[in-house]
Amino acid sequence: MKKFLALLLASCVLLTFASCGGKTETDTTTKPAGEMTPEDYTGTLTVYSPHDSDPLNAGVALFEAKYPNVTVEVIADGTSNLVAKIAAESANPVCDVIWGGGADTLAAYKDYFQPYKPMCFDKLDASLCDSEYYWIGESPLPMTFVVNTQKVAEEDIPESWADLLNWDVAKYGKIAIADPASSGSAFTQLCTMLSVFGTSADNYQSGWDFVKALYPKLEVKSSSSLAHKDVFAGENAMGITLEKGSVAYEEDWMVTVYPSDGTSAVPDGVAIIKDCPNPELAKLFEEFVLSSECQTAQNKDWARRPMRSDVEATGLKTLSDIKLINYDFDYVSANASSIKEQWQDIVVG
Picture 1 (cartoon, one colour):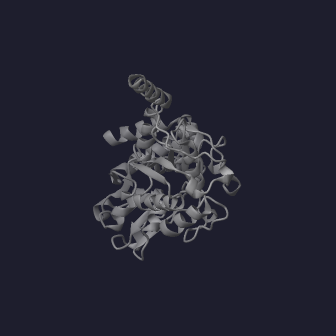
Picture 2 (tube, rainbow, N blue to C red):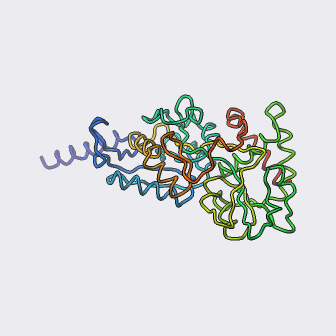
C-alpha cells in the first residue's frame, strides 16, 4: 500500500510538471479585474527597459509600492539589444513588457508584441500609438542638443543641425552621441538628421551626405545617457541627446537647444510581449506607466514629457512651439536594418 501511494504521488508530481509546459507563470490574479484590490495582484513581472536608471528605478519603485505583492525584475540595456533579445526568446518568452524605446524601433518588432488597448486611451494622442495597439506611446521625446556653456562661448553654441558642421573640434572637442546601432534614441537622432536634410524619395541621400560630413566631429558613447551626463561632467562640451536627458541636467551653465531646422518627437513606447508568462501583470504595468500618477511623477522628478492630455508638461517647452519634422515611421521601421548597416559603413570608413 505504501509503495502504491508513493507511486501515485510521483505520478501526480510528473503530471503537474508536464502541465506547466516549461513556462513559469507567477501571475496568481483570479478575481474579475473590477473586483481586484492592489493587494490581490501577486507574482513576479519581468520588465525590459532602456530608460536611464534613475527614472526607471523610480517608476518601478512606485509600481511596487502601489502593488506590494508584485515583484518587478528589470533587465536594462539599449533598445536595439533588448528587442533583439525579445526576438531571440520568442519561442519561450522571458520578458513580460518592454518599457521605453523609440516607437520607430518598437514598430519594427511589433510581430513579437501582443495588442492591448489601455483603458486611458482616450487621454492619449492616437497618432503616437500603433493603430492596432501593438505598442503605445508613453512619452513624446524631442531630440535636442545639450551644451556646457562653461566650455562653449555663447556665439559658438549651435542653433541648428546645419550649424554642427561648423563645430570647432580643435577648440571644443568632439560632440557626444550614443551609438545608433545599439541605442534606440541615437537611432532616432540619426533618422532625424536624415529627415531634416533628405527625403524618402531618394532614400535620404542628402541626409546621408550630411551624416558623413558630421561623423568626424562625433564621439560615439556606449550608452544614451552618457551623451548628456558626460557633457554635465565636462568630458564633452556638447552632446546630441534626448529632451528628458538634457532638461534633467539643466543648470545655469547647461542649456538645452531645440534645433531651429527641425527635430523629431518620436515617443518612447510600452509594449506587452506576445505569449509572455504574465499577461495580466503586463497589462497592469502598462496601465500604470500610462496613469496620471506615474506620468506626473516622471515629469516632475525626471523631466519626462507626459503622454496624457490631462497631465501638464511642467518645466518643458510647449510641443507646439518646437519645430517638428515630418518623421516617416513607416520608412524607418521598414528600413531599420539597412539604416544601421549604412551607419556602420560610415563608422568603418
